[in-house]
Amino acid sequence: MKTILLYASNDAAMESRLQAALDVARRCDAHLTLTQTLPYQDYLAIDMFGGAHLMADVLAASEAIQTEVREKMEARLANEAVKWDWQQYDGSTIDMIVDASRFSDLVVFSLGDGEKINRNVQRSTLGEIIMDSQRPVLAVPASGNGLGFDRAMVAYDGGDESASAIRAALPMLKQVGTVQLVEVEEKESSFPMTDAAEYLARHGVKCEVKEIKRGRESVAKTLLSHAESYRPDFIVMGAYGRGRLRENLFGGVTRHLLGESQFPLLLSS
Image 1 (cartoon, rainbow, N blue to C red):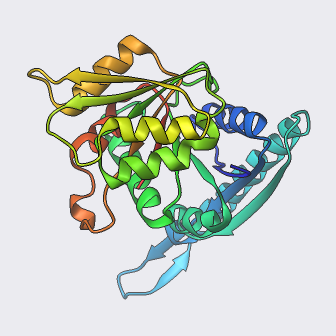
Image 2 (image 1 turned 30 degrees about the vertical axis):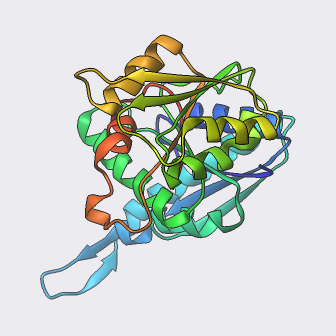
């Protein structure tokens, strides 16, 4: 994990994802690329005759904010022992992050803390980035304060996405003191959890294997309940499947955790 892409903006969650990105970069001796986007289409005004023109005053104010963000980040990073660079794109946030991530090993974005509407928008944006970039994404709570490496939890269900997430997370899992491989007891899998444990062991990652009884709760709620007890520094889990339709992407376990998790999520499809 040598190239980390960080979405840079003036939103309230910027500090938490910056801290997390810096922590990963230091641990993995990685290069940090900050990506800033200016979506010009958001500043188009459509008139009643079908014409369109830029709202110049609003656009100028937005560009001034973007410049301020960049200057603050550059001053901040000058004091950090991390290699970094800055990229700026004109276009939609999702499209630009996907394009910029082509030669990145990890994308750092934010979970949708706060009001329900904000969580829903952020969850949808995250889903698009995970699906379209095909890169692992570290989704960080806005209330986070950096990323620890004492313990990690790997949510496993025997699927391709789980295996992909484990492979993508290896550089980070190798830095963790204690790794717990967790599966919610539901149905027999063709690829048992012991296969995943053996794979991790061959890469020098020793882990505790734990099967949790589901009870009356959903799989997602059972996983979150266990996480609240175990208190991992981050959770590794698979997300979606490449063959699913976009309108069906946000169901199930991933949808719930993206909306409700208070722990950083490392997701891969």
